[in-house]
Amino acid sequence: MHAWTATIQEGIATYLFQHPAWSCTRIHPIPECLGYIHDGKFDGAIVFLEQSYLSEVRDLQIPVVEISNWLSEISFPRVVADDEAIGRLAASYLMELGLTHFGVVGRINDPRYSTIRMKSFVRAVEKEGFTVDISPTGQFGQAGQVTTPGDIVTPLGAWLKKLPKPAAVFAVDDNIATDVLELCRFQKIMVPDELCVLGVDNDTLATQFARPPLSSIAISGSKIGYEAARLLDCLIDGEPPPTKPVCIPPIGVVPRQSTNMLAVADEDVRAAIRYIRENVHEQISVKDVLRVVPLNRRYLERKFLSLIGRTPLQEIGRQRIERAKMLLAETDLSMPAIAKRSGFPNRVRLANVFHDKTGMTPTQYRRTFRLHVE
Image 1 (cartoon, rainbow, N blue to C red):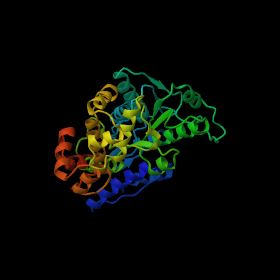
Image 2: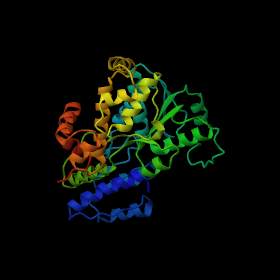
Image 3: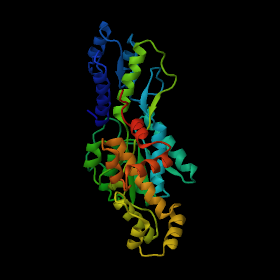
Image 4: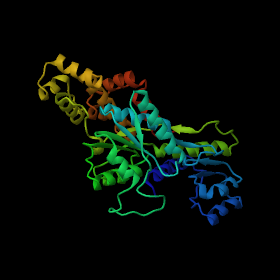
């Protein structure tokens, strides 16, 4: 089972726990199992939909909620990840690294989510005056073809070789991103020094087994599952379906070694940003940065503004907020604990700064990106 699918089922299970009258049966999408639904024992279905069994699902005489976002022309209500927001987030994160060359890798056969993420990424990068190279394919070989480590001369491999270096590559999911990392390893493309790679899903096994460990955009699969169950409940009760897909925003980027580079020519700025990144959980100040980079404060500020558009103090604040976001979304830590691990002196300071920067309180942010608890 794909880790992302498992988290969706966790969200459905949470809804079931909160609604004891519900019962749920997991069914494999094969004809004999799908036919079992027609016996009238089921009131609705949450479906990870693919082309191979689309007609069977259309024949069901019960409400259906679709969660895969693979197929384009679907009339079922959908609860899916906000793929537009994922593309924008990927672009923003990779551009903040100071890179100016970008590539994007999609999936073979262009599933809907892949197309949306790619187009959104390209628009966001081009809006800032850069261009994006689009890969010829999203996998080692053709669909269904098994490849070996020695079978590496592919259109995607050749494309990676030709990208201007250093560059950043956004892959539309972690499986594609790990393919990219494998190709880089066998073609001796240095990651992250020559190529930064970012995936989507934050699949724990895929990201940690990758070499180097893969940075990835975290998606709240559990929230997708929970909201899909909630929507199905409403449809069973006779409520009208939503006119647009229900889109769940991404949690944020989980940075790992595959993007741990700073495309800044100035050694002082690079050293300062690295220090901030590695120590942001402490209550560091610009004075601490100046101990590592012994320059006049105003001189360092001018360098920062010129190269990354932020002062050292603003960079410290930005990274603290990003760390707090991830802790809020992925842990059950208390607010004092999150404040401490994000470099804030106390929960009050965390709340004030967080609201100023995001427009939400930390509690509101946590509720937005995690399961709704009734």
